[in-house]
Image (cartoon, rainbow, N blue to C red; front, side):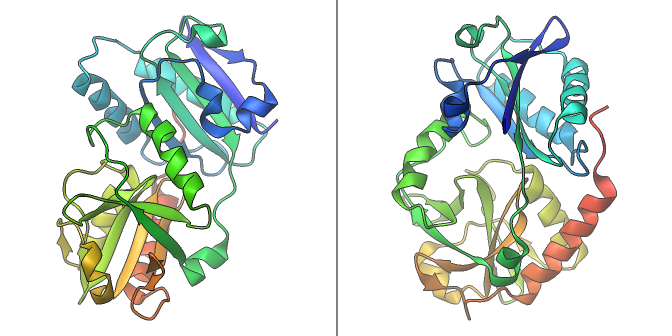
Amino acid sequence: MDTLLYAIEDDAVVALPVLEPVAKAGNGLYQGLELGVYSMMRTFEHCKFLHLEQHLARTRQSMQRLGWRYTWNESCLRRCLDTVCDGAPFAEMRVRFDVLAAPGVALGTQSRELISLTAFTPPEPGLYERGVSVMTTAAIQRDDPLVKAASFVTRRHGIEASAPRAYEHLIVDADGAILEGLSSNFYAMRQGVLYTAGDKVLEGVTRRIVLQCARELAIPVVLNAPRLNAVEQFDEAAISSSSRGLLPVVSINRQAVAQGAPGPLVCALRTAYDDYVSNHVCRAV
């Protein structure tokens, strides 16, 4: 089975049954639950994480912004993550942890804390060499960009299904600003300067590293959202996420970005990001 599901009960991890058809339905794994907040990440070297503490802090912030009084045991969550990842049969895995809005009774548990693991295969190297093509959408916006709400995953599925050949969909607001991807952050480079939205977007853990790497490479960073009507002026573009790292974007809505190939700034940033990862991954405890 490619999916494992657990609940945290009484400071211990408990395996929950997963029906294979449900697991293959993506977010169908969470049907019948009152969704709350979540975080998604990948492991490295089997059971190591990159800045797990930042994922936890973002989850804590999300609960606070929703006005929840729920108290969780982060030390216990760390121990449970380490236990299930260490014992998982996958070389590397995508890890999602949820704090539900109500107990997961539909799954047979009174817990509000779930962990799911799925086998993870990194994007093929050719994607980094060729870059990817993306589309844009104005059909969805985050209710609160500082809340990583699990309901957003459900809402985005219809958009992803509408154009399955697009590697990612970029969210554009009413003013034509490119904010972020459905599951990524977005960057555009022009005349040696990196542009990315400074607000109205999720505070990506990978994004924070990319911006740090840019400054260390002396690449100026401007926290203004790139404009959709200025794509022809982009010299380079990229998206980032925990599972992808930094990935070049070579066309937007079938319009080529510059020469339609990855450029030098994105390649330099990707190398710096990969070096950063190799020096900072560690186990959950």
